[in-house]
Amino acid sequence: MKILGLTGSVGMGKSTTAQMFVSEGVPMFDADAAVHHLYKGEAAPLIEREFPGTTMNGTVDREKLSALVVGKPEALSRLEKLVHPLVGKLREKFMQDAQREGAKAVLLDIPLLFETGDPSKFDAVIVVSAPPEIQRERVLARPNMTPEKFEAILKRQMPGSEKRARADFVINTGDGLESARNQVKQVLAEVLKAGWTREHK
Figure 1 (cartoon, rainbow, N blue to C red):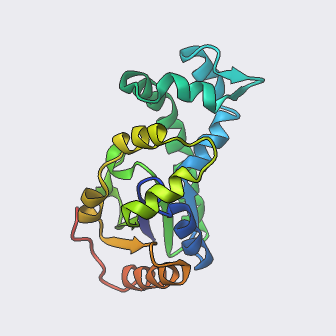
Figure 2: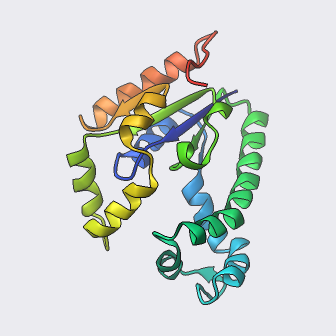
């Protein structure tokens, strides 16, 4: 079973591209969705203990938590130490289930794969990219987004040029959905070929 890592900076079209892989029959583990799930359950009491006042009725209030950790590396690091091991357990279960069901490949959607993950654990790393002006336009169209918030998010993320240089495949989403869909099909055809090995370890 091939393990594909999907990443890309904010506003690059990663979530849409991930769904294209799912449409091609590739099971996906979404790290952000896993965090959402944990914030409503297992992680909430741990986060409340570390960051008092950030939960309501057993659920993490993301806005309150965000106010305490965004732009504060030490606080963010404390949060990651709580959440990452729990996400890891969910990911292991997903992989075991996919293996048992005979999947040829699985996709792990990990926004900060290069920043906090280990690229060498994947059979292929795929970076979703788009021109900076399209990225900016997409992100600033989101509710409650400001130029300052956008800049703070970018500071946490590795520059797009560096991600592209370290990727095995780059999917450009700046040319529309049909183009991206064709690129997804090409990536899968290549990775599932016998003898595929990564150059970037």
